[in-house]
Length: 566
Image: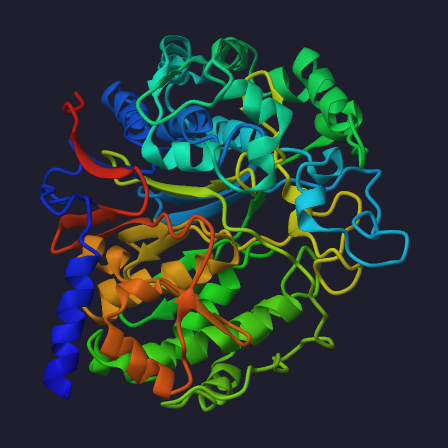
């Protein structure tokens, strides 16, 4: 049987063969000043970042350029009308800073704004395309703050590629085609149908060229005027007007836009094996990822390896414990028990609940310094994008960025889509993720910087995927660190998202008898939904970059030869 499962694992890995890797990178020691690493969800976004690095820019500069391009070429996932978390590593000081560009609720938001007259939650498909779904966007202000603090090149030089591609057009990929013609509500929204119309009564298909002159004009103004181009003036007026149209119109005002402030936060870090993992604090769910990895570390998953179905069962059980705690305690509130969720004694006690077979769906625990567990009713969909940059000086950015659902709210202003981030709040006005004016919705976005014990850079990783982000990132970390797989192979491992009583994932990527053995132990993997993962990550092993891009998306991972600085 053991031999059979090793053969299953080999088939599992072969079926998940990656399309992009950067393991051929030169050593990051001697050549640190002339080698860099980039991974993002579209080749044009990687090229935009590479152009900035070759012109002498740093990781923050490249992040601005990459986001501007992703807003154009991957509009179903992120954009200038959305929000993001950016974790930055400073090689000179070996320190980490977190830039929180999460959207905020307008001043006019109310706790029951997503309830019907009877007090029940409105259907998600109704709310997601409404003006009420849009929060104050934060990505642009956050990137501007990060650039002001740490950028190297002039801000107005970072949008050249996105402006050019918007004017000249880009080729629609099969992946983008899938969302243009998808079953979700936004695909039928007027702005989506208009933007992706082919002029013949239908919509664009893969291979067609898409131009966006409105976006080209906007990023030109953004380059010249800075973030005020979005938060004040004509674009701000158009955003407000657009969210106030139709039924369930929003309360967003120009004052809300002008008042937005990004937040610079302290990272939450916790050891895992020989590394230190650093993530954003709440309202990000980074503490959930750290707790999950701490639970896994208290099992024998590493010794079992990917060929053993019991390893996957134990991983599922650890995931369910984490999600029970995350859902109950994490939000944009002051009393999230971050230290308690990571308390070694508490984690060890929770880990005793992990067995060789799945038990009943777990409930939230009682971590030290926690109040009573909240009731959560958040419908978090799997949108978003992630990218990684390591510049020639060893500075790094791990950034997860989103407009929430596919094409956000489906409403477009100046060539970019507006977010539907308000739907990341709990629809019922209870628990830590309840809606309140000025509050930031809980996020599963968890960009990670990985450190060595001496706080030198060891890598970076992250993924889109809604609440499944925590599962996607943890799976890749286990594959790369515990099972010693190359990063591209770790990323390509099947996804398994265990939350409550559900075991969702890529059932077809597990061999039949492997999946059957897990089912005997109570983990019956059923096909999931949504965008799946979009992992981009890198580890520095033996002085070399070992990186990869998720084969489930259009992205690539590359190393870049940089000119030596004088």
